[in-house]
Image 1 (cartoon, rainbow, N blue to C red):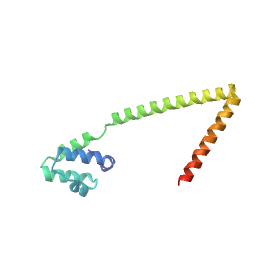
Image 2: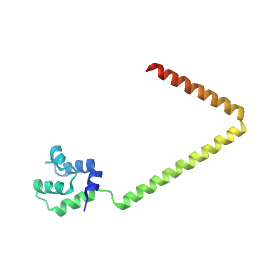
Image 3: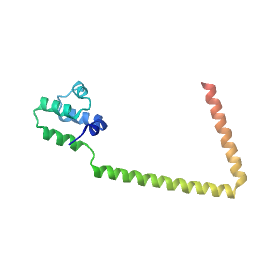
Image 4: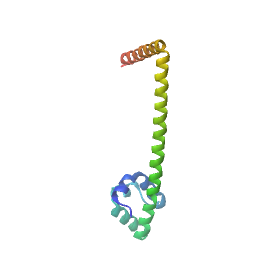
Amino acid sequence: MINSQELQGNWNMIRGKVKEKWGQFTNDDLQMVGGNVDQLIGRIQQKTGEERRQIENYLSSLLPSEATMQRAADVARQGYQQVADQAEEAYGRAQQAVREYPTQSMAAALCAGMVAGAVVGLMTRLD
């Protein structure tokens, strides 16, 4: 069964699905419920005549399953690891370039600093 925390965490999506399934619900009807599971189920029963278990099953089906959440976490971890690996590789290439071309690196850093300073100076004048 869906609990209040799950309902409140997914309230915007659930509210839209409730209005989609049971078109007689208005924003005012759903606002009165305020994320309370029992009130929502009672309100749906009152307006539609459906059984509590059917309503609970429908609301629970709207929430992401544990497996879906685990897959999403795994994908996020993989993406983070890829970005971390790429950043580490780029940092290594930058270090190597500075070692091989110290004078050009210092000149590039000086130019970048001057450009950044000029941009900040212009932006403060615009305010």
